[in-house]
Figure 1: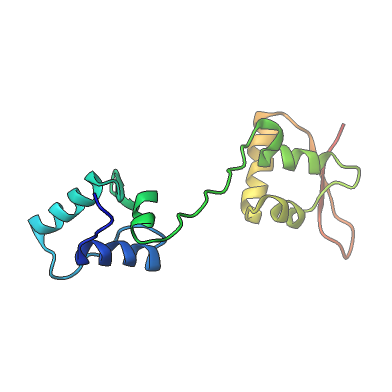
Figure 2: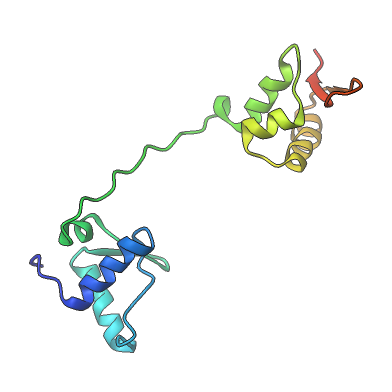
Length: 147
């Protein structure tokens, strides 16, 4: 396809990039039924959008057709057993000072009920860890893995 977009194609791509982070969710009201399907088919066949399952997104070529630079994908953090949230919790509980529910929530992004559930289920029942808790007057409850 030449760099020449139809006004309808331009409107669809521009809206997707300006309003929905590159997801094609909007079509002009004048575009109905078969005409809408033809425009989508044309954009896909020219590589300007990609359609995966029910999600339609603007491609690198779609950005370039509008004279824009495509965003650079940020590298994903690969989780391993050593860098999992469960490993983080275990390491926090192994510290000499132990850890509070709030500290674990901050480190993992979990809600307090999720932390308590993980300690009771995954750590105690499944892994068999002996988790002790202590509470001193005027301070938060501290949890530790006893060794």
